[in-house]
Length: 113
Image (spheres, rainbow, N blue to C red):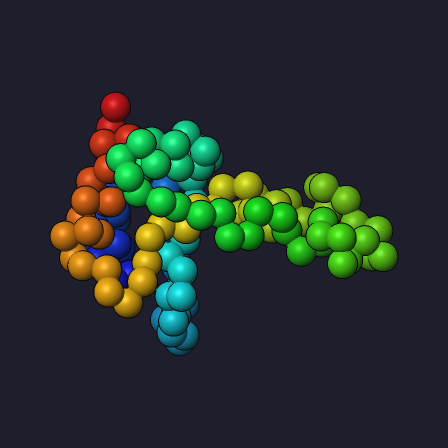
C-alpha cells in the first residue's frame, strides 16, 4: 500500500514522503506525509470524503510528561517542524489500489490548483 502511495505521489513537489533508509524496513502502520499546507490539505481531503489524522502533533520535548526537562519551543526545531507538518493518510490492510489512487489524485489536484 505504501508503494502505491509512493508511486502516485512521487512527483508532488509540496509534500515530503516517508523515507526509509536502504538498510532498514518500515511496517507502515501509518503513512505520514509532510506539508506546510497540512490544515488546508486536510480540509480539502475531508471535503472529498477522505479522512486524515495528525498522529503526532506535539513533539516529545514539549509534552507534559517531559516538562521536567525544561525544554522549550525552538530547542529541537527539526522535531517541531515534523510535528507541525505531518499528516497521516488513510491506510488499513483492506484499502484498495483504486482508493489510494483516488486519495492521491485529490492530493495532486490540491497542489496543482
